[in-house]
Amino acid sequence: MKAKNKNMGKENLGSYLVYGILMVVALFLVYFLMQFGISPLVVSEPEKMVTGYSCEKSGDNRITCEWSGCYGDSVVALQKGESTYSWVLDTFSGKHDFDNLGAGNYMVVFVCGNQTRILESIYI
Image 1 (cartoon, rainbow, N blue to C red):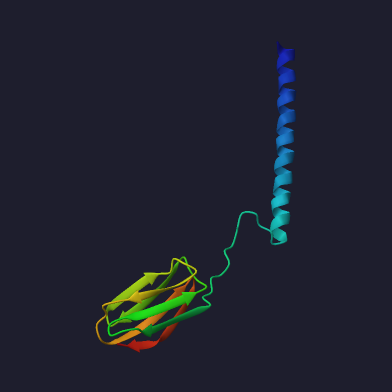
Image 2: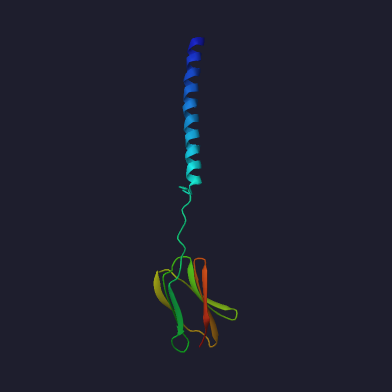
């Protein structure tokens, strides 16, 4: 019985040695990839940049805003005093009408990803 246990110990030692060598190779591979700026674990998203935007008075109580080049995590907002009206840009390009607005000056803000564009105020 003792001879059988000695052989099992040698087989286990061999498998541990193989696993140890594989772990060392994996660590060297990760180190190599990190040294050359290649990281398979991190994927960066390209920066969003709005290419066109505008807002203008369109009627007695309406402001129409148009955009192109930005959507997802993006919004256009009108602000008048403490009131804010906003619209999520859910298409690459498009337009939205802010209706039934009261008279006054509205500040227009476009937010596209991490960029913010502030247009001059529009009076209706």
